[in-house]
Image (tube, rainbow, N blue to C red; front, top):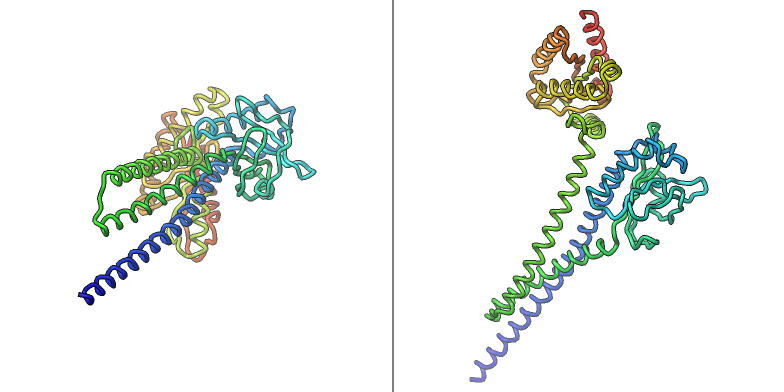
Length: 401
């Protein structure tokens, strides 16, 4: 009898040791998961803040921004920049977005503030932060700690705006309410704790064979909080997707814009340098007579002319990305079936253009060239050959008018 009691006592002790170890393991995993997920969420939030600041900066004209002064308020360049920033504040529901200028003495001041209630006046000084100084040196950055001013407590992201010479012409600042930022981190932390506790509760329940209505109610509450957090994250992703689409699309024609074109050419140059880019082609398009139409018939007719030319290009080269890189200039980066059948497609396109010229419709000059592995060291080399051929084609079309 004593031996049996001793065995039961040992079994209970082993069970308790195993249970304690299990609890400690879950606690350790929970703490690790909290730290990892909190850091990841912080990274995602900061990347979203920087993406919005960068997208807004890309939309501004650095050459115009650099020339703005207090006397520029109300002018066309000022209002154009103001409208751009205001569209971001309204569409993405930011707390604040504004333009900043670096002064000669190392301080910073407001330039453009679309806030409808209490805008910062042009020239009013802004508190210096390390992130703001980094942006003035040409590097987008974000505040790691919140700061407080007359408008409230915020985390801010900053992105430089470059002029055509590549110099910093100004800075775009984006403010996010610090309470929202901290609440997002705390909420995510609470979800991780809830999930960890839920897993721990299930283990204990099955181990001790306990299942009560109270625990079921807690599980439903945890599930609701998790769904709310996931829904908030999905809404944030949708907002960022809208901002990216706005930044990469030409508003008139609907094709990719110059910013998207630059990113595409940078990827190609990287592939050429690494040896992974072995096959692509470039077609340069120029719409003949756009300036004449704008001058004689007005810009509304010019826009129709541009859309018709773009539709002609997209309809023929439907398997490749189309970019509008200038007022009347488009580029197609040939890939897939369009690259394989490029000569046939271009011949059909040119025949259509010559028919259009005879019938008084839109005329588009073209120039094509392809990447030569081992010879071409950059995308620009291929583009320049195609561009030269485009001008030769333009001269030919004028000669047969």
